[in-house]
Image (cartoon, rainbow, N blue to C red; front, side, top):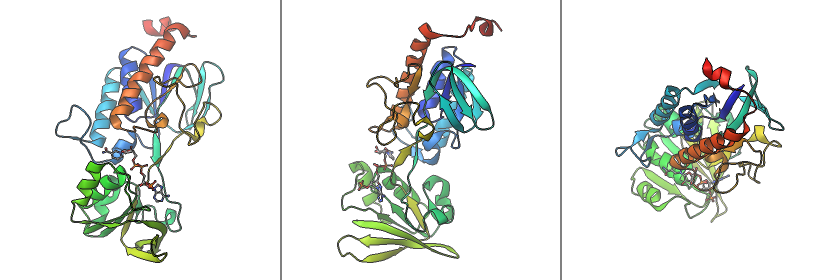
Length: 317
Ligand code: NDP
């Protein structure tokens, strides 16, 4: 039995952990398959306040985790299989750990990289297809790379991958890019980046020796073309990690957790959500961290009047 269980360890969950631990709530933090969340798959973060020279994503997350541990947050690794929020204490079933109980829950499971769903893609994940430039870019030294997508992620990945590749081609299904102007300009100024706009990915073409390229449909000519490449990096956005919450807490049509605007409260009193799992608009490390702070404060306030367990004995120990 815990006062609070935090599910997910991106900037939202870890900030909530820092705040709850400092408030003497001894939260249990459950780390899933990607401890530290999406920022551990990114390179340098230039816009997180307090780091004028920038900081590497994994280092920032490691620092946040250490900060939470310093104040008494407990960490366990495991995959949350099931939840029961029908009555308190809430129940969280974790693979290999059984059922845990808590007076309150903070959901901060973030979002995961999306795939194109085209032939050849899944068969070649780890063999030339990737969603993480930081993780896999190194393997494409002096090779040709295709990056799919037109958002900030695609621009960032393409720019980063030019450190390794001889050439990076950005494939976007429309003529216009969705990315912010500053990120677009940076990529457009990079002589190693070429552009295949208005082209829809059709198939990842691979042979025995790995990926050969990406087949695309040229929307203008109606013809298929093969863009030769040794690696295909897919950067087309994310899906919220909420499968385990379906039917237990209100979600929107895309699967994001619905919260009362201006708060982190879900439809279940005592269950809070923060970070990308409930944010379809800002999705930044700093906004995730900010909402993690909000969740911890909302949670603390809620527990002030709603403790069902007598914690005095536990505190005396
Ligand atoms: P976005 O949703 O912004 O962009 C997704 C891109 O993928 C779009 O160009 C979209 O095309 C394309 N796409 C989606 N589905 C498909 C498909 N099936 N086939 C082909 N193309 C597809 O996602 P991002 O991950 O780029 O960014 C998410 C958020 O994170 C944004 O708010 C962004 O600003 C932020 N971010 C900020 C960074 C920074 O500031 N350093 C770095 C990375 C992300 P279309 O436009 O046609 O829909």
